[in-house]
Length: 151
Image (cartoon, rainbow, N blue to C red):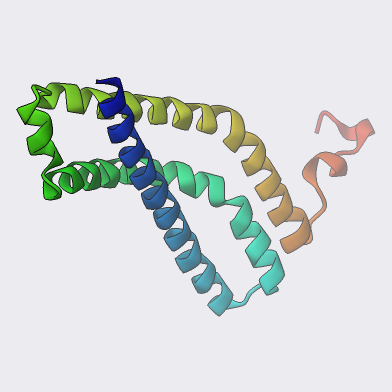
């Protein structure tokens, strides 16, 4: 079963990476084009701002990518009659779905860590870039005067 689990895992992970990157790039590209057509800011600033938003978009696209990769994995195994071969050697649907559920749990934990540890500093940097470079406002924390701190 270890070889079969690695085989199913490889197919699932490959489908997940393709789906997650495809959805993330598609959403980002569509948003980038709409911003570039509005042309409120220079295109270089818009591209950097949207690039700083890629991790957030990736986190949002993980659940649909998991669903798409699950469907593609199981339908691909069914299309090539590999599910029938697995059933014939005594591997049931519970064992096949256990491998997929374990991978979905790992992806969910990775998504949680990404949201908890990676996204807040990236979001802070993105908002700082938007305020200081694009809107040309001074940074709020540098603007506070030390003698008027209680206002």
